Length: 193
Ligand SMILES: *[C@@H]1O[C@H](CO)[C@@H](O)[C@H](O)[C@H]1NC(C)=O
Ligand SMILES: *[C@@H]1O[C@H](CO)[C@@H](O)[C@H](O)[C@H]1NC(C)=O
Ligand SMILES: *[C@@H]1O[C@H](CO)[C@@H](O)[C@H](O)[C@H]1NC(C)=O
Image 1 (tube, rainbow, N blue to C red):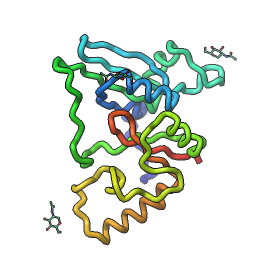
Image 2 (cartoon, rainbow, N blue to C red; image 1 turned 45 degrees about the horizontal axis):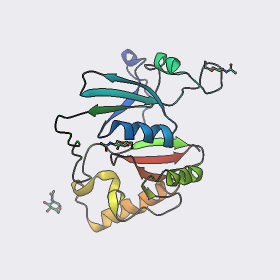
Image 3 (cartoon, protein in one colour; image 1 turned 90 degrees about the vertical axis):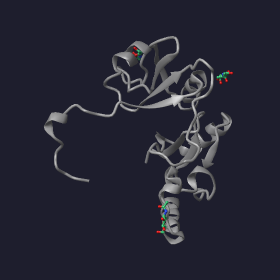
């Protein structure tokens, strides 16, 4: 990237959260809290039908124990990076939100860092999480990873160009896990080192 400093007027800007539209709020809260140890910061009901939920990891805690109470998490809300917001709409007819029918889209994946991917992989299996690629495995030739990151038909590449990407992605992601959250969003799990 560039070594030039950012526009000084952007000092203090940072990405705080990404937001997912979820079909079943309970299911998504359970998934991200029990599988990945995120904490439920709050759920704000704008109306009986529309709610916003924030999940986050503790940000170190005040005393070095890595533990923060909910009050402390909330106080840190606008200082914390890496939060996930779950937007839940409860429609009149109870129909689920339709996801895209193909993997072509602008949303690619949620990236998560873990100290020990192999231990995490076992953990995902315990929770019955759908895994697309395990640590050390080749990139799959079927499913959402068969095309580079959901690009789907939008790529329209030749076989040679595709093969070049497949080989490169295989090497790049050798130590990574790819799995799925309850709404089918792709999760990329990388080792800390
Ligand atoms: C939502 O998820 C919870 C937890 O997984 C489950 O118990 C419940 O049956 C689900 N609700 C619907 C309407 O599927
Ligand atoms: C650290 O802070 C947490 C949250 O305030 C508190 O529950 C815990 O007892 C503290 N631990 C120590 C060792 O002071
Ligand atoms: C895909 O590429 C081929 C060959 O370059 C071209 O003829 C075709 O119009 C492209 N299709 C789309 C949908 O862009």
